[in-house]
Image (tube, rainbow, N blue to C red; front, top):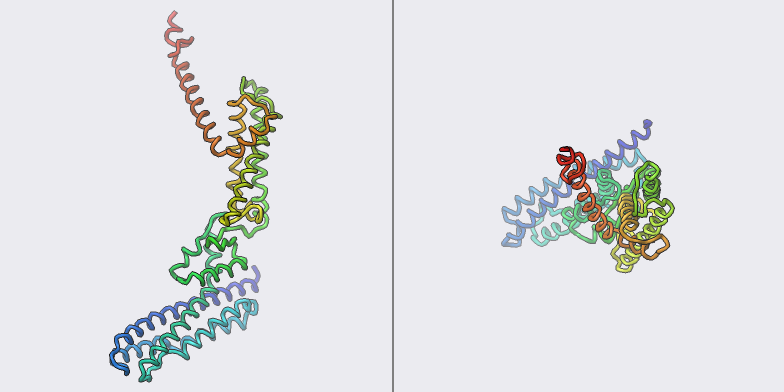
Amino acid sequence: MNGNERGSDEARARFFSKVRTIRADAKALLVQLKQLEEAAKNQDGSRPDSNLTKELQRADRALSQKKLDERLREVEKIEADFPHLEIYGDCFGEVRNAVRQVSADWPKMGSADLTAITKGIERSSKALQEVVLGCYRLTIPKDVERSLGDLSIGKSLDFDLKYKEEIPDEKVREEILAALSQRRIGGWVDLKAGLIYRVSPQRSVRVLTYLAPLLAVAAAVLLLIGIANLKHLGIDLPGTHLDDAKALVGAFLLVLGGAVIHLVVENVKQFQMDAAPIVAISNLLDWMHLRWAGISLMAVPLVVVTIGMRMAVDSTPDQVATYILAGYSADSIAGVFLTRFDSSASASAKKLIKRLKGEDGSAGGKDGNSQ
Protein backbone atom coordinates (compact mmCIF):
# COMPACT_ATOMS: atom_id res chain seq x y z
CA MET A 1 0.00 0.00 0.00
CA ASN A 2 1.50 3.33 -1.05
CA GLY A 3 1.39 6.57 0.92
CA ASN A 4 -1.60 8.00 -0.97
CA GLU A 5 -3.71 4.91 -0.38
CA ARG A 6 -2.74 4.79 3.27
CA GLY A 7 -3.57 8.48 3.67
CA SER A 8 -6.87 7.94 1.89
CA ASP A 9 -7.83 5.09 4.22
CA GLU A 10 -6.84 7.10 7.28
CA ALA A 11 -8.89 10.07 6.05
CA ARG A 12 -11.92 7.85 5.48
CA ALA A 13 -11.51 6.37 8.95
CA ARG A 14 -11.32 9.87 10.48
CA PHE A 15 -14.33 10.96 8.48
CA PHE A 16 -16.50 8.10 9.72
CA SER A 17 -15.19 8.52 13.26
CA LYS A 18 -16.36 12.15 13.24
CA VAL A 19 -19.73 11.15 11.78
CA ARG A 20 -20.22 8.59 14.55
CA THR A 21 -19.30 11.24 17.12
CA ILE A 22 -21.93 13.60 15.69
CA ARG A 23 -24.45 10.76 15.80
CA ALA A 24 -23.63 10.07 19.46
CA ASP A 25 -23.96 13.78 20.27
CA ALA A 26 -27.35 13.91 18.53
CA LYS A 27 -28.60 10.90 20.49
CA ALA A 28 -27.47 12.49 23.76
CA LEU A 29 -29.30 15.71 22.83
CA LEU A 30 -32.47 13.72 22.10
CA VAL A 31 -32.30 12.32 25.63
CA GLN A 32 -31.90 15.85 26.98
CA LEU A 33 -34.90 17.03 24.96
CA LYS A 34 -36.95 14.13 26.30
CA GLN A 35 -36.25 15.26 29.84
CA LEU A 36 -37.11 18.83 28.89
CA GLU A 37 -40.35 17.64 27.31
CA GLU A 38 -41.32 15.82 30.53
CA ALA A 39 -40.64 18.97 32.56
CA ALA A 40 -42.78 21.01 30.14
CA LYS A 41 -45.65 18.53 30.46
CA ASN A 42 -45.60 18.95 34.25
CA GLN A 43 -45.72 22.72 33.91
CA ASP A 44 -48.87 24.24 35.44
CA GLY A 45 -48.82 27.81 34.15
CA SER A 46 -47.89 29.39 30.83
CA ARG A 47 -44.60 30.74 32.20
CA PRO A 48 -41.66 28.41 32.96
CA ASP A 49 -41.45 27.41 36.62
CA SER A 50 -38.20 26.72 38.41
CA ASN A 51 -38.02 23.05 37.37
CA LEU A 52 -38.57 23.85 33.70
CA THR A 53 -36.02 26.68 33.91
CA LYS A 54 -33.43 24.27 35.32
CA GLU A 55 -34.10 21.80 32.50
CA LEU A 56 -33.78 24.62 29.97
CA GLN A 57 -30.41 25.50 31.47
CA ARG A 58 -29.27 21.87 31.27
CA ALA A 59 -30.50 21.61 27.68
CA ASP A 60 -28.73 24.83 26.76
CA ARG A 61 -25.44 23.50 28.17
CA ALA A 62 -25.96 20.14 26.45
CA LEU A 63 -26.45 21.75 23.04
CA SER A 64 -22.99 23.33 23.13
CA GLN A 65 -23.35 25.02 19.76
CA LYS A 66 -19.63 25.68 19.70
CA LYS A 67 -18.90 21.93 19.96
CA LEU A 68 -21.32 21.04 17.16
CA ASP A 69 -19.88 23.72 14.88
CA GLU A 70 -16.41 22.43 15.63
CA ARG A 71 -17.45 18.89 14.67
CA LEU A 72 -18.86 20.14 11.39
CA ARG A 73 -15.71 22.13 10.58
CA GLU A 74 -13.55 19.05 11.26
CA VAL A 75 -15.54 16.96 8.81
CA GLU A 76 -15.60 19.73 6.22
CA LYS A 77 -11.81 20.03 6.46
CA ILE A 78 -11.39 16.28 5.89
CA GLU A 79 -13.70 16.55 2.86
CA ALA A 80 -11.70 19.48 1.49
CA ASP A 81 -8.33 17.76 1.98
CA PHE A 82 -9.45 14.48 0.39
CA PRO A 83 -11.59 15.00 -2.74
CA HIS A 84 -12.37 11.26 -3.02
CA LEU A 85 -14.66 11.71 0.01
CA GLU A 86 -16.96 13.86 -2.13
CA ILE A 87 -19.05 10.73 -2.77
CA TYR A 88 -20.38 11.23 0.78
CA GLY A 89 -20.93 14.95 0.24
CA ASP A 90 -24.66 14.93 -0.52
CA CYS A 91 -25.50 12.68 2.39
CA PHE A 92 -23.32 14.60 4.82
CA GLY A 93 -24.81 17.83 3.49
CA GLU A 94 -28.16 16.62 4.84
CA VAL A 95 -26.55 16.00 8.22
CA ARG A 96 -24.94 19.47 8.17
CA ASN A 97 -28.24 21.17 7.37
CA ALA A 98 -30.06 19.20 10.06
CA VAL A 99 -27.46 20.14 12.69
CA ARG A 100 -27.86 23.80 11.82
CA GLN A 101 -31.64 23.41 12.01
CA VAL A 102 -31.26 22.00 15.52
CA SER A 103 -29.39 25.13 16.56
CA ALA A 104 -32.05 27.38 15.04
CA ASP A 105 -35.01 25.57 16.64
CA TRP A 106 -33.48 24.74 20.03
CA PRO A 107 -35.71 25.90 22.95
CA LYS A 108 -34.42 29.30 24.02
CA MET A 109 -33.50 30.02 27.62
CA GLY A 110 -35.09 33.46 27.55
CA SER A 111 -38.45 32.26 26.27
CA ALA A 112 -41.35 33.14 28.57
CA ASP A 113 -43.94 31.29 26.52
CA LEU A 114 -44.53 27.59 27.22
CA THR A 115 -46.00 27.13 23.74
CA ALA A 116 -42.82 28.44 22.12
CA ILE A 117 -40.73 26.11 24.26
CA THR A 118 -42.90 23.11 23.30
CA LYS A 119 -42.67 23.95 19.60
CA GLY A 120 -38.92 24.36 19.92
CA ILE A 121 -38.69 20.91 21.51
CA GLU A 122 -40.73 19.35 18.70
CA ARG A 123 -38.78 21.02 15.89
CA SER A 124 -35.42 20.29 17.49
CA SER A 125 -36.35 16.65 18.09
CA LYS A 126 -37.33 16.26 14.45
CA ALA A 127 -34.09 17.86 13.28
CA LEU A 128 -32.02 15.68 15.63
CA GLN A 129 -33.70 12.56 14.33
CA GLU A 130 -32.69 13.66 10.84
CA VAL A 131 -29.12 14.09 12.08
CA VAL A 132 -29.10 10.56 13.53
CA LEU A 133 -30.64 9.00 10.41
CA GLY A 134 -28.32 10.95 8.13
CA CYS A 135 -25.34 9.66 10.09
CA TYR A 136 -26.70 6.13 9.87
CA ARG A 137 -27.05 6.48 6.10
CA LEU A 138 -23.34 7.26 6.03
CA THR A 139 -22.06 4.72 8.56
CA ILE A 140 -24.32 1.70 8.00
CA PRO A 141 -22.77 0.67 4.66
CA LYS A 142 -19.34 0.42 6.32
CA ASP A 143 -20.79 -1.31 9.38
CA VAL A 144 -22.62 -3.82 7.18
CA GLU A 145 -19.52 -4.44 5.07
CA ARG A 146 -17.54 -5.15 8.24
CA SER A 147 -20.25 -7.48 9.59
CA LEU A 148 -20.47 -9.37 6.30
CA GLY A 149 -16.71 -9.84 6.36
CA ASP A 150 -17.14 -12.05 9.44
CA LEU A 151 -19.58 -14.37 7.62
CA SER A 152 -18.86 -17.20 5.22
CA ILE A 153 -20.07 -17.00 1.62
CA GLY A 154 -23.83 -17.53 1.38
CA LYS A 155 -24.57 -16.72 5.02
CA SER A 156 -26.97 -13.85 5.63
CA LEU A 157 -27.11 -10.79 7.85
CA ASP A 158 -30.59 -9.94 9.15
CA PHE A 159 -30.63 -6.20 8.52
CA ASP A 160 -33.99 -5.62 10.21
CA LEU A 161 -32.97 -7.52 13.32
CA LYS A 162 -29.61 -5.73 13.55
CA TYR A 163 -30.95 -2.18 13.16
CA LYS A 164 -34.57 -2.41 14.29
CA GLU A 165 -33.81 -1.00 17.73
CA GLU A 166 -31.61 1.83 16.46
CA ILE A 167 -33.89 2.64 13.50
CA PRO A 168 -37.45 1.78 14.59
CA ASP A 169 -39.06 3.35 11.51
CA GLU A 170 -39.58 0.48 9.06
CA LYS A 171 -39.78 2.79 6.04
CA VAL A 172 -36.44 4.35 6.90
CA ARG A 173 -34.85 0.91 7.24
CA GLU A 174 -36.28 -0.08 3.87
CA GLU A 175 -34.89 3.12 2.33
CA ILE A 176 -31.40 2.50 3.73
CA LEU A 177 -31.51 -1.16 2.68
CA ALA A 178 -32.56 -0.14 -0.84
CA ALA A 179 -29.62 2.27 -0.96
CA LEU A 180 -27.29 -0.56 0.14
CA SER A 181 -28.44 -2.66 -2.82
CA GLN A 182 -26.90 -0.03 -5.11
CA ARG A 183 -23.53 -0.05 -3.39
CA ARG A 184 -20.60 -2.45 -3.28
CA ILE A 185 -20.73 -3.74 0.28
CA GLY A 186 -19.67 -7.35 -0.26
CA GLY A 187 -23.23 -8.62 -0.09
CA TRP A 188 -26.35 -9.43 -2.12
CA VAL A 189 -29.41 -7.58 -0.79
CA ASP A 190 -32.81 -9.26 -0.51
CA LEU A 191 -35.11 -6.27 -0.09
CA LYS A 192 -38.24 -8.29 0.65
CA ALA A 193 -36.77 -10.44 3.40
CA GLY A 194 -34.54 -7.73 4.85
CA LEU A 195 -31.47 -9.97 4.47
CA ILE A 196 -28.00 -9.35 3.07
CA TYR A 197 -26.10 -12.41 1.82
CA ARG A 198 -22.33 -12.49 2.00
CA VAL A 199 -20.61 -12.67 -1.38
CA SER A 200 -16.95 -12.74 -2.19
CA PRO A 201 -15.42 -9.58 -3.68
CA GLN A 202 -12.73 -11.67 -5.39
CA ARG A 203 -13.48 -12.72 -8.95
CA SER A 204 -11.32 -15.85 -8.66
CA VAL A 205 -13.36 -17.06 -5.66
CA ARG A 206 -16.63 -16.37 -7.46
CA VAL A 207 -15.50 -18.30 -10.54
CA LEU A 208 -14.44 -21.20 -8.33
CA THR A 209 -17.89 -21.31 -6.70
CA TYR A 210 -19.50 -21.31 -10.15
CA LEU A 211 -17.39 -24.33 -11.10
CA ALA A 212 -17.75 -26.20 -7.78
CA PRO A 213 -20.99 -28.06 -8.73
CA LEU A 214 -19.41 -29.18 -12.02
CA LEU A 215 -16.34 -30.40 -10.14
CA ALA A 216 -18.61 -32.27 -7.70
CA VAL A 217 -20.40 -33.96 -10.62
CA ALA A 218 -17.05 -34.87 -12.18
CA ALA A 219 -15.89 -36.35 -8.87
CA ALA A 220 -19.11 -38.36 -8.61
CA VAL A 221 -18.65 -39.73 -12.13
CA LEU A 222 -15.06 -40.75 -11.36
CA LEU A 223 -16.22 -42.44 -8.15
CA LEU A 224 -18.85 -44.44 -10.03
CA ILE A 225 -16.31 -45.43 -12.70
CA GLY A 226 -14.01 -46.57 -9.90
CA ILE A 227 -16.79 -48.68 -8.35
CA ALA A 228 -17.54 -50.25 -11.72
CA ASN A 229 -13.87 -51.22 -12.10
CA LEU A 230 -13.50 -52.81 -8.67
CA LYS A 231 -13.73 -56.17 -10.43
CA HIS A 232 -10.26 -55.54 -11.87
CA LEU A 233 -8.96 -55.41 -8.30
CA GLY A 234 -10.49 -58.78 -7.52
CA ILE A 235 -13.49 -57.30 -5.72
CA ASP A 236 -16.61 -58.95 -7.07
CA LEU A 237 -20.02 -57.30 -6.77
CA PRO A 238 -22.29 -60.05 -8.08
CA GLY A 239 -25.86 -59.29 -8.98
CA THR A 240 -25.64 -55.61 -8.16
CA HIS A 241 -25.44 -54.18 -11.72
CA LEU A 242 -22.50 -52.06 -10.64
CA ASP A 243 -19.80 -53.55 -12.89
CA ASP A 244 -20.81 -51.70 -16.06
CA ALA A 245 -19.21 -48.25 -15.95
CA LYS A 246 -21.09 -46.94 -18.96
CA ALA A 247 -24.46 -48.04 -17.61
CA LEU A 248 -23.65 -46.75 -14.13
CA VAL A 249 -22.60 -43.29 -15.37
CA GLY A 250 -25.63 -43.19 -17.68
CA ALA A 251 -27.90 -43.93 -14.73
CA PHE A 252 -26.21 -41.17 -12.71
CA LEU A 253 -26.72 -38.62 -15.48
CA LEU A 254 -30.44 -39.48 -15.63
CA VAL A 255 -30.70 -39.11 -11.84
CA LEU A 256 -28.84 -35.80 -12.12
CA GLY A 257 -31.30 -34.67 -14.77
CA GLY A 258 -34.20 -35.43 -12.44
CA ALA A 259 -32.57 -33.40 -9.67
CA VAL A 260 -32.07 -30.43 -12.00
CA ILE A 261 -35.73 -30.60 -13.06
CA HIS A 262 -36.74 -30.62 -9.39
CA LEU A 263 -34.54 -27.59 -8.74
CA VAL A 264 -36.05 -25.64 -11.64
CA VAL A 265 -39.61 -26.54 -10.64
CA GLU A 266 -39.04 -25.44 -7.03
CA ASN A 267 -37.59 -22.12 -8.13
CA VAL A 268 -40.46 -21.50 -10.53
CA LYS A 269 -42.96 -22.24 -7.75
CA GLN A 270 -41.21 -19.85 -5.38
CA PHE A 271 -41.03 -17.22 -8.11
CA GLN A 272 -44.77 -17.52 -8.74
CA MET A 273 -45.43 -17.15 -5.01
CA ASP A 274 -43.05 -14.18 -4.94
CA ALA A 275 -41.26 -15.89 -2.05
CA ALA A 276 -37.83 -16.74 -3.43
CA PRO A 277 -34.98 -14.57 -2.09
CA ILE A 278 -32.80 -15.60 -5.01
CA VAL A 279 -34.32 -17.29 -8.05
CA ALA A 280 -31.90 -19.36 -10.09
CA ILE A 281 -33.61 -18.49 -13.36
CA SER A 282 -33.28 -14.72 -12.95
CA ASN A 283 -30.08 -14.52 -10.88
CA LEU A 284 -28.22 -17.63 -11.91
CA LEU A 285 -24.67 -16.53 -11.12
CA ASP A 286 -25.56 -14.98 -7.77
CA TRP A 287 -27.59 -18.05 -6.88
CA MET A 288 -24.75 -20.41 -7.80
CA HIS A 289 -22.24 -18.31 -5.87
CA LEU A 290 -24.34 -18.18 -2.69
CA ARG A 291 -25.55 -21.79 -2.83
CA TRP A 292 -22.41 -23.44 -4.18
CA ALA A 293 -21.81 -25.63 -1.12
CA GLY A 294 -25.37 -26.97 -0.95
CA ILE A 295 -25.51 -27.56 -4.71
CA SER A 296 -22.15 -29.33 -4.71
CA LEU A 297 -23.08 -31.58 -1.77
CA MET A 298 -26.19 -32.70 -3.66
CA ALA A 299 -23.81 -34.97 -5.59
CA VAL A 300 -23.68 -37.23 -2.52
CA PRO A 301 -27.38 -38.22 -2.41
CA LEU A 302 -27.39 -38.50 -6.21
CA VAL A 303 -24.57 -41.05 -6.06
CA VAL A 304 -26.40 -42.92 -3.29
CA VAL A 305 -29.62 -42.98 -5.34
CA THR A 306 -27.78 -44.16 -8.44
CA ILE A 307 -26.05 -47.02 -6.60
CA GLY A 308 -29.22 -47.88 -4.74
CA MET A 309 -31.30 -47.99 -7.90
CA ARG A 310 -28.79 -50.28 -9.59
CA MET A 311 -28.55 -52.57 -6.56
CA ALA A 312 -32.15 -52.63 -5.35
CA VAL A 313 -34.11 -52.23 -8.56
CA ASP A 314 -33.90 -54.70 -11.38
CA SER A 315 -33.79 -51.99 -13.99
CA THR A 316 -31.60 -50.79 -16.82
CA PRO A 317 -30.55 -47.26 -17.80
CA ASP A 318 -32.94 -47.30 -20.75
CA GLN A 319 -35.77 -46.96 -18.22
CA VAL A 320 -35.36 -43.21 -18.37
CA ALA A 321 -38.46 -42.21 -16.42
CA THR A 322 -37.55 -44.41 -13.46
CA TYR A 323 -34.16 -42.82 -12.97
CA ILE A 324 -35.35 -39.27 -13.63
CA LEU A 325 -38.13 -39.65 -11.05
CA ALA A 326 -35.59 -41.06 -8.60
CA GLY A 327 -33.43 -37.99 -9.14
CA TYR A 328 -36.44 -35.71 -8.74
CA SER A 329 -37.01 -37.17 -5.26
CA ALA A 330 -33.34 -37.79 -4.51
CA ASP A 331 -33.40 -36.47 -0.92
CA SER A 332 -36.10 -38.82 0.33
CA ILE A 333 -35.02 -41.81 -1.77
CA ALA A 334 -31.39 -41.43 -0.67
CA GLY A 335 -32.58 -41.65 2.94
CA VAL A 336 -34.35 -44.94 2.19
CA PHE A 337 -31.32 -46.42 0.48
CA LEU A 338 -28.96 -45.28 3.24
CA THR A 339 -31.18 -47.00 5.79
CA ARG A 340 -31.13 -50.19 3.73
CA PHE A 341 -27.36 -49.96 3.24
CA ASP A 342 -26.92 -49.48 6.97
CA SER A 343 -29.11 -52.49 7.77
CA SER A 344 -27.29 -54.65 5.23
CA ALA A 345 -23.89 -53.52 6.49
CA SER A 346 -24.89 -54.19 10.09
CA ALA A 347 -26.14 -57.68 9.23
CA SER A 348 -22.99 -58.45 7.24
CA ALA A 349 -20.81 -57.14 10.05
CA LYS A 350 -22.58 -59.36 12.58
CA LYS A 351 -22.08 -62.42 10.36
CA LEU A 352 -18.41 -61.56 9.93
CA ILE A 353 -17.95 -61.17 13.68
CA LYS A 354 -19.64 -64.54 14.32
CA ARG A 355 -17.49 -66.16 11.65
CA LEU A 356 -14.33 -64.72 13.16
CA LYS A 357 -15.38 -66.00 16.57
CA GLY A 358 -16.32 -69.39 15.13
CA GLU A 359 -19.87 -69.09 16.41
CA ASP A 360 -21.41 -70.08 13.08
CA GLY A 361 -19.93 -73.58 13.12
CA SER A 362 -17.44 -72.88 10.34
CA ALA A 363 -13.85 -74.02 10.28
CA GLY A 364 -11.64 -72.12 12.65
CA GLY A 365 -14.19 -72.18 15.45
CA LYS A 366 -14.04 -74.34 18.55
CA ASP A 367 -16.02 -77.18 16.98
CA GLY A 368 -14.18 -76.95 13.72
CA ASN A 369 -10.79 -77.36 15.43
CA SER A 370 -11.75 -80.02 17.94
CA GLN A 371 -11.02 -82.91 15.61
